[in-house]
Length: 329
Image 1: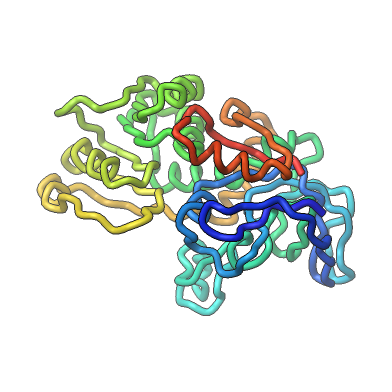
Image 2: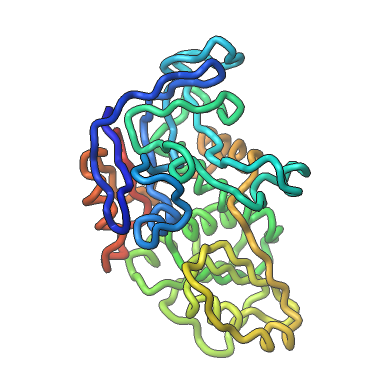
């Protein structure tokens, strides 16, 4: 089958590999669409997270079950599904408490085992999440990043009267704006990014205002850093108001220094938002399938898996007009 395989820093190759076998408790899924995540770019640029080289990358996908193992119950060939791609250790305190997204050794498919950047993936039945038959699988392929946004929204406990600044208008930022506006009724959302094209998208999905730089002195009761750069975090610190909350969803590639005294003097709260729960994934599928959220404006390009090197180069380029890129194996 066709697959996109990681071989090293900025070295992703199209290869023909053996179609995976379906284990007794697994489903064999024909991948309809698979999305490139920001964490895939961390792998591409820094080799973060990856445990096996070469490895079939990818953890965001939607597809159709082609076959099931003899121990699989409740799923059958022809069913549309996504899967929870997290691979928790099941041994740490978080896992024992059922908080799998805070697992001390959390991994994902495409990092610790073969991922979804191929024509097929075999995956355990307990990770499967059903998708309604009428759903658009191209949009449902964004259920995993939307689940990240829903986790942010839940932790932020958004109210319509909140004044929100969202820094970094990539796919997660865009989906957070869309969910906050549409599902929580937040009226004031200021989007901040260096890309005018992405700011235009932010306005399209619900931002009330957009800018490339926040004016000095302008503060918000809730600020979200969805960019993961030292400059964006320090900007967030400056622009959260006294007794406000700063939410950080990004993965930072290296340590940096920030002004902790400003957070202390403002009595601001710093909140981490790490991926999602299974419930977030199920909710994401539901709101997409029911048409409550239209995520299609966020999909910029669709590539064949044979074009994987080109797709990664595009996302890694200076052209920041592109938001979500999908593969259609």
